Length: 109
Image 1: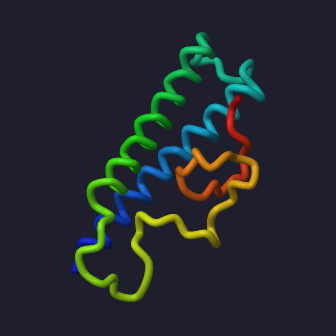
Image 2: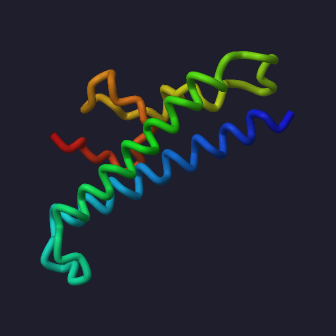
């Protein structure tokens, strides 16, 4: 059934968008003078934070409304259930459930 491939793709896209926004924020924070086309660094960072918030909400909606078991999952785990082997959230609290952090970046605080 394509249900799980579709949900997995939506989840992966949201996680990818979060990772991309986090990288952009780190670039803005670490080398803001090298980004000439963004004169308003705070607005640029806020735009990326908004992307993260939007994608995190999308993940929560997918989990709440579509991760309920309907049929046995062929070959494994529900794509919307975090894979503990890929998770690296020792530096984050339990409220951060946005998937693996491939770059190992720390959250903004």
